[in-house]
Image (cartoon, rainbow, N blue to C red; front, side):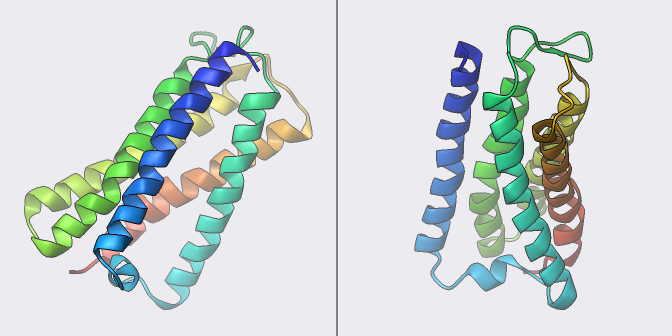
Length: 178
């Protein structure tokens, strides 16, 4: 792997650990709270959310594989303007707000306020924007590989975007109740 890929891996490892840590902390300090995080999302909509979450996870591995093992960061141009470093920013925009979602949501549930609800919505929107930026960057990259790994990366980023930019940013908040 190239040094830029190692940097991206470090960003993903450190920030990913923060996301997982926020979930572990959230569930350990709020036992039995998993159901409350669903708010009013139930039935078929919850089933749809399970499916899109699973596809997003699989998609995450697909585009991560492609980023780490199928491209050369020294040759990459995104939209003929940006280098591989743009992925650093994109993943920071996705992962830092992701680590803030659960603490903000539990705070909002404990002490409902407009400010906390806006905070929850902002972090969800940032993750969605970052995911759409990732999909765009993968589609706008050159030189473009046309093999199966590339198309799995595109499909994976699309699935990840559906979960984060649609389900999390718009659907979940529309049904969430305290």
